[in-house]
Image 1 (cartoon, rainbow, N blue to C red):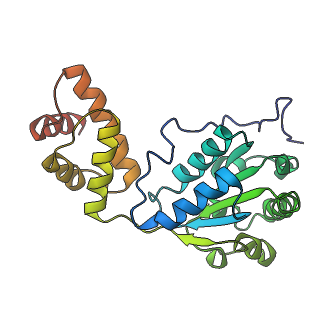
Image 2 (cartoon, one colour):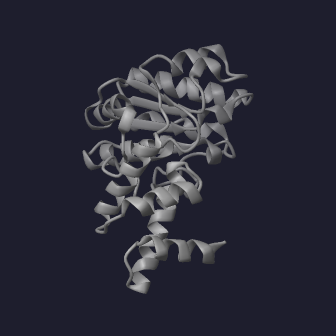
Length: 237
């Protein structure tokens, strides 16, 4: 049976992304959701919380940021991406109620997998009994996830449910400029607008491109001017 190993870790190479912090996340229209998650991670707050929305809206980033914040505050937290966890025996969840915060990402991936659904249902109840926190994400609201056991859907909707809204183009530019400032460089307006036109428009892709451009500009000892960005992107095609 797949269990936690001797160090209390899952038998998967799951680690938090270095940049996944609340400081690195531009909340925009999702401020209420971010504040609720921060409170739960730092203080306990609500015992359960659910975030949903399309890809590229920061669900994974926020869950990892919550785990990092909880850990910094001395509270044990674990990030469980279901894209990887569904490959394991559901019994890996047996001892997770010892964590003060469990963050389950992409819970829609257990749709139709009854053993995993029952395991998450039991985990939710065990965490609630101990006063510990449970946060989950999916592409849709709990009651819209197909082939989900009614009992699990009910538990997922037990606390506040937030839909994460997509950022507007103007908000994406603000987010990119703030990310650039945190990395110590200026992102001109025309360069940011060009990235939105040329690249995939989700924030995950845009941020990855910005970080790569930052590294390239340091090597070339160039600023992120529009000509430099155009030349770099042309070479990547």
